[in-house]
Image (cartoon, rainbow over all chains, first blue to last red; front, top):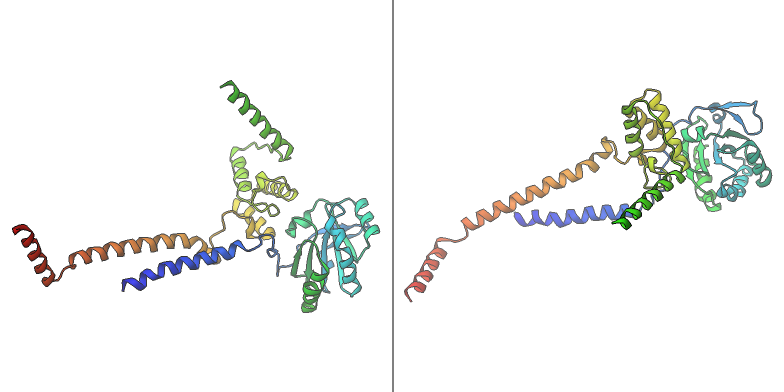
Length: 174
Length: 156
């Protein structure tokens, strides 16, 4: 009676050790956005090109949209521009959030690296970024036709990311 | 002694300089309770960018934004729980150094307590088993043999 009970101890120990060891291998920077499956936050902002033009969250309903958070100061944003242009060429609706930038620098960036975006939301204080839980650019969100966030990509979008993750997700929610 | 004093002053100056260079702003509070809440809240939230630094200790831009938001929400009269919810809604449970007690964290919080209880139970079982064993260790036959052996020792 006593032996099998004592045998449970090393088994339990190994179980917990295995669980914790698994945890060590996890990458803490790969975690889901807290906004997954939630509605895109409400906001009111102007567009990068036109300070008279007011936009709000209704901009992101009606069609599956990729929302890319970028800034002129962000090197990875420049590197992922070819991939974003390719996504736009594939007929995917793209909306940009110009995050913690100035109008001048933002427009310069689009002039130099291309503009895949239907429209760019101007967010100089990063307040929309804050509500999206953005803590660094670039970040990319997939918003479905009902304005619900369905996929989140943190950081640089590589050509493989486009093929293996983003295009399948877009297809899935269309 | 003088050397130690000079060194410690130099160290303190260095740390002060680092704190100023780090750009962590100093906020003035009229109400000491509010100030304490601000300190506790900003010390209890992890910077989402820097992995293991509280937002009160990090010069990442996002930490500055989060401190600012905590400050504004405090001024707005929100409770600590409301402020924590506000942050978790945006940045996820990751930012909490102490995860909240809810369905999916019962295991996390319960495991250490559970392990202590199991350990205690094992110790009790072992003590009991040992007591039983010493009481029942010898059968009547063995006892008779033991007595015989002892007697033989003595008589020789």
